[in-house]
Image (cartoon, rainbow over all chains, first blue to last red; front, side):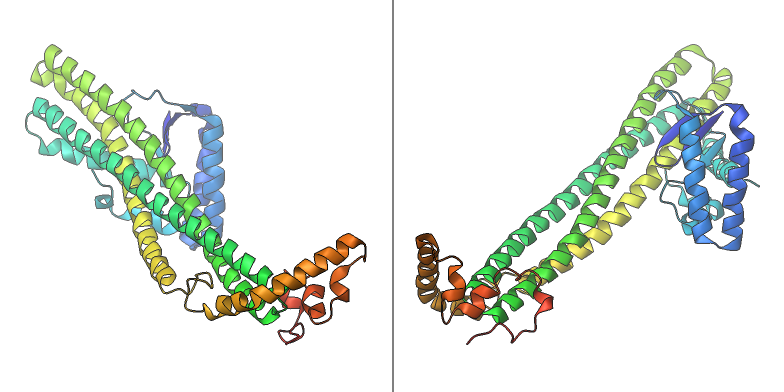
Length: 92
Length: 267
């Protein structure tokens, strides 16, 4: 499946990696719920590192939506909350 | 629900909304392509803006570097002349300059990172826009309006996500350059005020004047010291009455905090 890291582009990740990525994603979400910026940062870094390690870059000229989209590497919890709460924030 | 799943759904919802607004799918293609070209221009302007900001920071760094070097030299001159008080003043100003420099270095690295990110975002978008154009022409030539719908949706959703991503990257870069511009402006004012300047061109040129006044007699002293050393009297400075305090302190000068201001002032 295709995974996008905001600010970096799309990566093709094998479906077999999904359970691992979902577990990391749950940590990310739990950190946001607890309002724990340090835990959020750690979960975000781990998640992005795993996606980068497992993924292969999608061809530049391929036009396909991503199944999953991850926040950019320096995203704060506030950034992610904005992203989730208000779709009007996505320009274009 | 998962964060990454929700974000992707939000991007997709935005694309679908835009698609729903279009009545004729073929019109959608041309309109979208137009928007893509505009965004591509915008991201290129963004790259240029960040580069401009980065160059401004670079220029300020060069200026401060010069100030720092000048102050350092003045501190040495002052110490050689036995004026530790002046050396201390120059060094304390130099330390202020150094901390501004460290701050600028951080900004510079950050802007450099932003520039690289935007540049590659622009390349990614460029590749997608070209792919979209090819697809658009194929769809228009090959399919009836009804048939075209699904193909258009596919292509449009794909590029819409890329555009959303690039749009967010531009916003982040703009926010950062705005902050940098404000700080660069403040620093320009600070530099213009002379607060970070070397003691020659700043408002404290009394220091340099004093150094200059003492310069002539000091030159003779140091020339004498050097000659004595050459003739083989060993560590000449210690044998020089009058300038003994100054030259004795010349070596540990950089650790200026270790000595109280008055200690090395022979005058």
